[in-house]
Length: 307
Image (cartoon, rainbow, N blue to C red):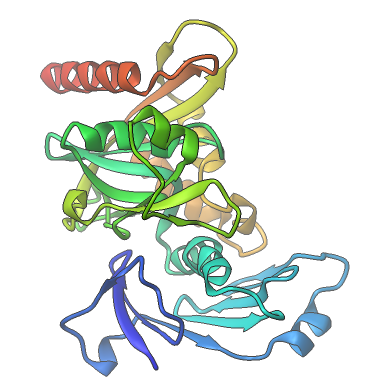
């Protein structure tokens, strides 16, 4: 049975249940942007893979294999084919469908996928980017605790609107939080689904704290871990801004083999002149999410007053 969902500004028809996403209520068959189907890709993988054990990438075409999970084909910005391996659970397939597959779809559609969490603060969007484990979702959760709304967690879709202004399109209403973060926020994991079996990272639905509006991107904050005791917050400018956006583009190793380097440079060059960009270093020896939230809010509001 196929179901139609709305996410990343797209109408998605899927043979796989995607409970994380919002089901679409207004659509017609000619309005489907992306189709997700199950098929057998074993022979295609053997034909294309060559020396690379995981990825085969060319223009408008990404083929990858995750051992004991599945083989995935993303092409033309509108098709995802999934070939499950063995008795893999649907949770594991969804992890890659909503992550790597959607990241590839967005790139093929010339939508910039940043790796992080995006929030609405005083009517504008701010993206918190960083490497895995930097604490992006935990920091975003601290904002949600204060009543702010989430636009995306993990893959952030960024485009330029008709006026050339960078905007974020809402993804879907879910966060991923480690058990340690739940503990710090006084939450229990009971009732939440682990991302993968035996994993201590949980899927947290946030439908009541999700913004469904396309929102202007006003700032990007790179979150880094440091062994220092103090929090450091600095402005990022010039070429460093371009480097930050490239470094935190989701699955950025797709860009060159997919022939998207020029597109990525031109898009991010247009973006950096319209954004405030910061680097925020947080100590790893203590929980700082609430302090970081205060610091970001005071800085953002100060910048708005200057403008």
